[in-house]
Image 1 (cartoon, rainbow, N blue to C red):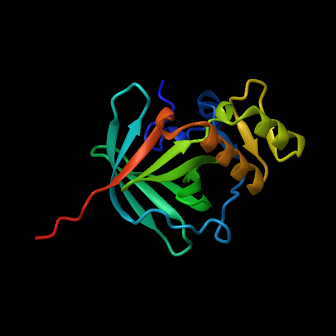
Image 2: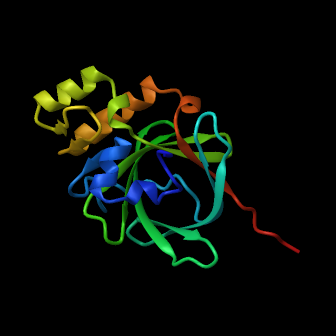
Image 3: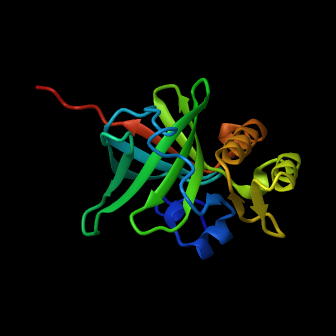
Amino acid sequence: MKTITIIRRALAVAALAALSGCLISEKPLLDTRNGRAAPLEPGLYRACEIEPGSDPDCKTMNVARDGSARYAFTLKEEGEDEEVTFARFRRIASGSWLAQLNGEEDEDYFYFLAEKDGDDFVMAMVVCGDIPAATRKKLVASREMEVDDDATVCTAKSLRAVMSATKAYGAANPIESRSRIVYSKIEDKKD
């Protein structure tokens, strides 16, 4: 089973989230005050799921941004209902952002590491078991994160926890080793 299927896997119910081993929160940790970064230009994108050792799975995604700095990612597939995923971003380093995603009916919020890679924008789900053990242990000791027994789900309780976990995940896992979604802007055709 693939870890991510173009945003939809990230928006699965908590039971599926447990299987994929992600970093979640039960309430939004990014909001209109602290999640206003705009790393992605609105428009149409080719969104390709890349799993190490597998062929890319690409879809067309419309990306829009509203007045509250919240992004809406809409999967464009013929014959299917439109699925909207909402996202907020916060810069955590130069060229690197924390992304918080949720669907219209989701009760949990999922966290991704987002990075610029040349002209592309890359998002990788933060995998609980791939967050360095020392970081997990420190955040659990400070009561800012809960981790289940086999480190398949990390539940962040604070913005500091999710930022620390995401930074540590990025430092410990090179981009080419991660399951990720690569967004490439589809250029507007001008006559």
